[in-house]
Amino acid sequence: MKYHIWTAGCQMNVADSQRVASSLERLGYEIADDKDNADVIVMNTCVVRQSAEDKAHGFLTSLNKQKRNNPNLIINLMGCMVGVKGTEHLQKRYPHVDVFSPPSDPGPLIAHITQDESRELAQSETQVRNALMDGDLILPAHENNNLVSAHVPVVLGCSHACTFCIIPYRRGIERSRPVGAIVKEVRNLVSQGVKEITLLGQIVDRYGKDVPDGPNLSQLLRIVAEVEGLERIRFLTSHPNWMTNELLQTVADIPKVMPHIEVPVQAGNNLVLENMKREYTRESYIDLITRIREIIPNVSIATDIIVGFPHESEEQFMGTFSLLEELRLDVAHLARYSTREGTVATRRLGDDVTDEEKRRRFRLLEDQQARIVGEINAKLLGETVDVLFEEKVKGRWKGRTPNMKLVFVESDDNLKGKILPAQITWTGPYSMQGRLLNVQTGEISRMESLPIIG
Image (cartoon, rainbow, N blue to C red; front, side, top):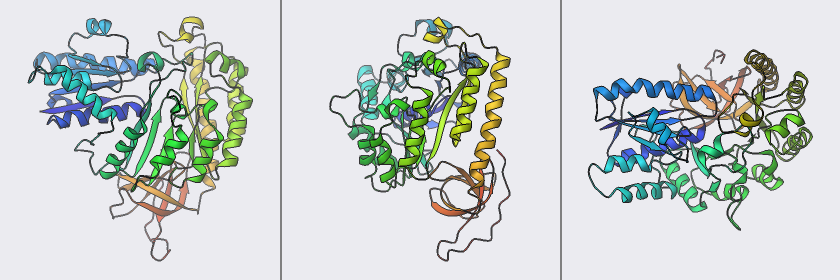
């Protein structure tokens, strides 16, 4: 028996898909080389933007024919498209789908599969949920001893409800996982060859806020850092309002925690931020970035930006432009605003910025950020950085620095999972090229690298 998983969206969905694969392989399933050869097809969906939902609909529709040709095929729709509030409308729209699973929950699929062999439906579902929540995760066979970096959810759901965001309505309220389960999962992953862990949450720096007298993210990082064999720790995504000095000092103090902070601003104008219900100001965000840079030496910072939010004027948009120019951040993830049914912004604010204008603003920020990051990376030319190598791409080894910078080098050796020093020989806004250092002699190797633009 074989399975195929189609994953869209964020890192949380990637982690959820690994959990589904782990659950299926416990039942004896193997990964299919193609969806046409699968006995079980899982669609793990994203609905943050309309384009993501449209892709999911297109893929679902394409499975109609495959289901008719193979009535025994099991189709599982999972993730934010399903949500946590019922599936009657989806069942009517997609009658060829057999199972509907909420985000982060493979239980319904496992229950459906095992009911053909055993009537102990509830037991099988409960066992799967408990095993995964307790950190009993085994990497799928095709990833075992092959995955260098893995994601570990620590906060499920979200209770903040920014006006543009559908996630709280689809993933449910904020729930922090127990420390013991998280550490167990990290240990399991490290024992299977993983070198780097990224702790995930919709608002990860709110970890523990829903647990009376529970540990916070700073304390969790210190505990996870004690796992033997773990080389690097990251966390995302943070909210400016809960980025404490204690957390920042932990990043500065613990060598395993990488000096890279992801903290979305979304907009650079206070009225737009108020309409988004972000609950901070442009000025407080600038103060936060200053504080991060003061506490963490050599830190890199990433942010998220939405352009074309309802009622955003040209002047307000230019506030975002000037903010990025002033702060000179290492990464800006850009998105054009799109309405999402059920959000406050869609109900109350509409969508009065044209698509053409959104695209113009997007390109303006894209060009600006490429220039800024190009200038930042250019300062690394000739410098030596430690790179954790993940995989070989088009004949070159791909890896990342502690600051999350992408580096390519040439080598005939197997570098997967190794952290090696490399001297930067070429820089661009999206990647850099390097030459490996001979660790024993300190000399630069003779391997030359050609630039990769991307």
